[in-house]
Image (cartoon, rainbow, N blue to C red; front, side, top):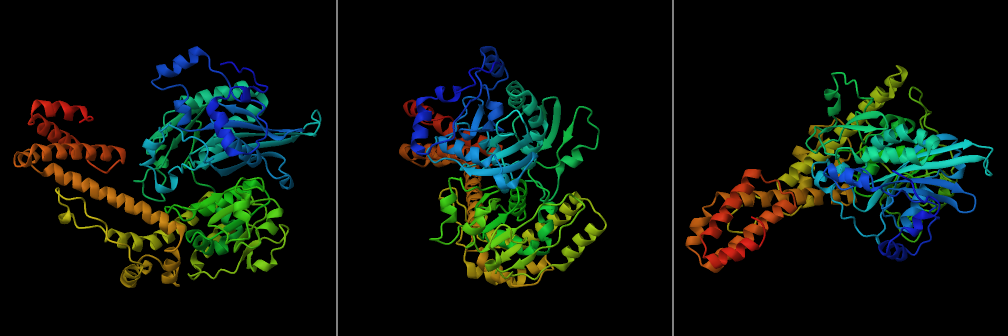
Length: 608
């Protein structure tokens, strides 16, 4: 593959659609010094020979790869976007530029890795590429992609270079993806970024070609992913996995000679390392995240801020955190004004920041975590205290959790003793993370089981489902009715922790996390009712029914049954394959019993 017209080629290759999108944004972006490559014909043919369009394999994993450099005249600038046809609006390019570099005060010399998340521009056309959608239904809810956001995975290098005017080489290799597979993409960058900085564009092209040959990111399958001579073995979790287990461990007992890297997880961060400075308050932070409270993490570098924000979001797993979160947020972010305004209450969002300016801008926020440098595994920083917000003046303030929040639950001293003992015995950080993750999982499950039990009771009885009536509706969620169930079947059945559980539930029912969770459950249960209704229809003798009804009513039935089939396919209803086949057989039999003219019309109205 040849790299053509690097200098300035990005802007000249844009089509009318790109111009319209950029115009709709109304933002000036940092200059695009270069944008990607041009495919040779033989490579396009090779891609089609594999049964995929060129870049379909790549697009299932990544939206694009960007290289962001520092230009003395332009500032931070996108130098390369790869592949060339990748669509990014000017607003998105601006966000990528500023989020791909640490703030100047961070002083990140050498190599730094971090992650950011940014909102997809509302003016951009939604991609027609739906390869990811078919896998989404099998993912755990907390790993489903959010169509409104992109993730950026960054490998930033800053080293002294006397040959450059500025005295430093500063560049970031950035992977842009819809997938929240933090650990996986950071591992990919570790494999390719150092060599890219040495070998430049041809190396990047070769790496992207490797990604394009990867199998699709199918949940539950063990995938072998080769990239630049290294083979990674990964498994993406499914919604059917038991929470807290890692399936890949069981799959790797026998030695694989060709495997270079085995990843036990695609998405988890080192939980204990992130919570280490604040583990005395980990239960209080769990409550704040569960309730969707506005939360700021002030850290010395993007690595610390992004890891800590992701650890917070992860701590309520298997619940999904439904509000916005920004692992690394800067004053140049397109949502800066929206999130820092003093004219209204802070939004339900978790922000990770490093700029000292935020200490003043966000001092009206109710909960602020100020952390120092994260220590390597085996070391433990001094435990921070809970402090009053008025004591937070600058980013130089001492580390601490600045809040006036009073936790609903009593602190679990057992987990604190267990983790402290692990530190004294020099237990590896990975083992400490397993203990902490299991603790959070059990806490979340104890909290959510009573809700799951009550919501299951809202489902109509199966005997109320009639094939000749619309599926019955779910009963309404009544907060007071739910509260009454807690006396006998509350979290006390599974958790040793005492406290005001009812107060915590009342607060949770008003939060975005409850709203998101209940909408998801209601959709799943409604789909289950639709599936049961389909099964009830299949058990009926529909041909006998048509003999007792008019042709008009029979045609109406056929059209309704065809719509049911389309709905089942479109919404991925939990219907058994033989049920679908039975329904198609019913439709065919009914059509064949009709006069020829009607048969012709009905056979044309969609596939059976």
